[in-house]
Length: 173
Image (cartoon, rainbow, N blue to C red; front, side):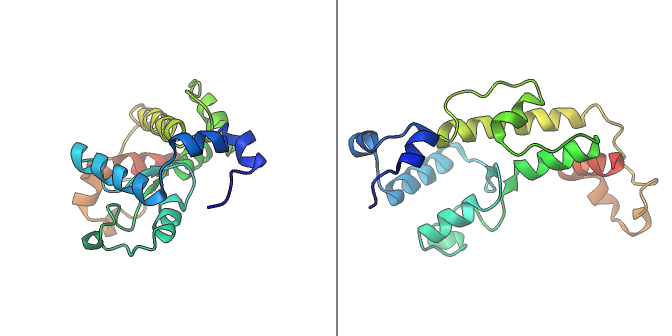
């Protein structure tokens, strides 16, 4: 294993001494994560800030996407950064890329230390909830009659709670 670089120390505050004293291998951390997921019966598709984190982890662990082989996430994840940017665009507002800066757009202060996995994941969840709460205030189409694709859209899809917030976002664009 390579030592922690100055760039990473400056970015995260994590030092080599901290890793040496408290660090675990990637495989151990992944096993702890799988135990946590199983214990709390969490959503299979994780939230991320930016694309590719789950793919990077899967490749680093040299695993296939097959849940039978121990990969708990399937092939999908929700990239909250993309949801954030889509929501900003739908409102005609400027795009912002960083999690800490994006949180300010929703009146949220970043909790913890930026670029630390636990803090970043907690804050990603917080902004995701804040974004979703914005959708409830919009006129949501449940029957799809005034959508351009209404004649081709299955009614059960338009009524699905899973897709209601996306229908709302599309109407704003």
